[in-house]
Image: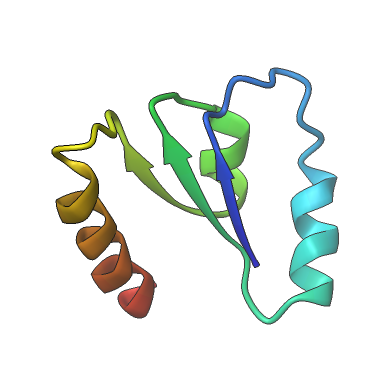
Length: 70
């Protein structure tokens, strides 16, 4: 399972990640333009600070390579 988020929700229950991990083979988060310590502490996370039309192809390619090594 891959979750794509900006991480702005401050009310994330960390037990949700444990439940997801028990159901799915792996759980990954692509965190775009934000930060969230609960997400980063509880699940494998790739952070992208900025995603523009110019950076999108490079970032997406980088994400694909990182996802393989996750």
